[in-house]
Each structure stands twice: as structure tokens, then as C-alpha cells.
Image (tube, rainbow, N blue to C red):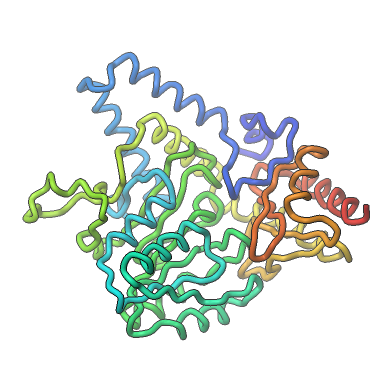
Length: 381
């Protein structure tokens, strides 16, 4: 599927420069159609009929198979969730903590990680070790900062693969390698990766990886995935659990127990459809175009005296998220002007404080150039 074909099934692109996929991607009409057809099928068969339950199981199996292939993981290492946050919490609160333990995060993290870390501190007295990472730090600097902060009290390293505020791609493979030398597992927040960059769980060798369906995959809200490496499947036991229905001698506890509640089959069907759409384009093609468009925005910004690039421009650490600031406009005011006057959708972030733009496969070079001109004109108002 080429760019124009995708734009043809994304109505928002008709009148809007949509650059907030990092919050939530626009939903393709094919995904909406699949959700609608699944709801119709459920209504016709009856939500508790044997025929429908079989269909629902098939939908679930389809989604797990598709996402396992996207992650280069085994299907028995995958469970479906409702969000990245749910997966992160299932792992964090599925571990036993004491006041002698420590969780290691960094100061760029999303509340999806900082909040449960704070709860661990409040509830159990766990020390939260937040490493200071700069938005333009190099991979070697990041690895050094993270690994040097690991102590004999560190029970878990929990980091985002891509930092949501600035688009910094973290060297997760290298961090996992060093952490494992000290017998510390690694949990990864993949909120900004699935559907944007090529992922390989075997290569990354992290222990846990949580990701959503509604962002770069452009799937429905309330869909997501949690990867648990095979050797950890029987270790984690979430506080919110359905395990009472299983004997403790059960040969292999199902990974689905880590999901908080049951999933909506129609939304899972939409999730599966979004995965098929990504596959039809090719994740390598998406990653290349996404980065190229973001690089145009970075390049245009770097030539301006009043438009400030707040993200890294390093090829090894950059992605499709670009954070920008103007000297004369506060981020919230800039977002308001962009949307109200120019129908450009973006969002504010803090640390660094600016406006974050997401360039996806469906965005165009013309949109990026138009945005660059708008920013330059606003900076000179």
C-alpha cells in the first residue's frame, strides 16, 4: 500500500495535517469496517453462543499470531492487553517488593512508568532510582548512566524504548545485555515503537515489553500487547489476578492471566486489521519514511534562528517524534494556534518543554514543508 492509498482510507488527512500519532493514530476505514462487521456478527450469533465464542477465539488467535510475528516472538510469549500501561502495571505489581528493593527508571519517563514506581515507594518503601538522561544523550552515554546506576538492590530496570517527550531512541539491547550481567530483568515501555520501527524481541533480549494498538499501528483504543520472555512466564503473578481458578500444580499457567479483564472481540479484530495493514506496507518501509519526514522537519528547524529543535538529530537515536519550541510562544499557546488557525494537530510535552510532532507514513513532504513555514512565520510574529 502506497502513501496515497493509505491517505484515501484516512479521512482526517483530507483537511488536517495530523501529526499526533504518538498520542493516538487516526483510524483507517478498513479497521473501522472490521470492527463494525465483527460487532454485527456477534449480534447475529449471540454473544454467548458456541458459534460466536469460537469466532472470538479465532480473532484472538489471529491477533496474537500477527503481533508475535511483528515482534519476532513466539505466540506463547504474547498476551493481549488494553494498553501499554496495563502491561507495565501487570509486571511491576506482579513482582514481590520490599523496602530493601530498588526500581531504576529515568527522568524522561511517561507517567505510565513513573506512577507505578511512585506507588511502589509509597506502598512498600521501594527506592525509586531515576537516572538523569538528556534529550540529546548518545547511546554510549545512556548505557553508561543506566548501568552505573544499577546496584545490588536493583530489582528491575524499567525504561521506554522511545522517550515520548523528545523521541530519543534508547539503546535497550545494550542496556538489557549489561543489566542481565548483574541478574537484573528489564521491562520496556514500547508505547512509541510498535508500528513505527522494526522490533525483534530475540535481538533486544529484554524480559518484558508492553505496547499499544492505538498509536503507530492506528488500531483502536483499548488494545495492546504484553510480551513476556518464556523463562519469566511462571514467575510473574499480578495483584489483580484470575489465578484462583487454576490449581497451583497447573502444568503451565496461562499468560492471559496478566491481562486485567477480558478483551472486546470487535476491538481485537480491529487491532488485527491494523497489524495486517502495517504488514501490507512493511514496517521497514514505514520506519524509513517516518524517519525521513522527521529529518526534513529537523533540518528545516536547524536552519532557523527562532525555531528551536529540542530533540536529538543523531541518526542512531532519532525517530518520527520531533519536539520543537518557539522563543515567543508557550507550547500550549502554539498548539492552540496550530490547530485553530492552520488545522495542524500536535501536542505539548514537558521535559523538554515544547510541542511534539509525529511524522508517520501517511504524512507527506508537502505537509512537513508547510508546517516548517508556519512555524517560521509564527516565530517572527
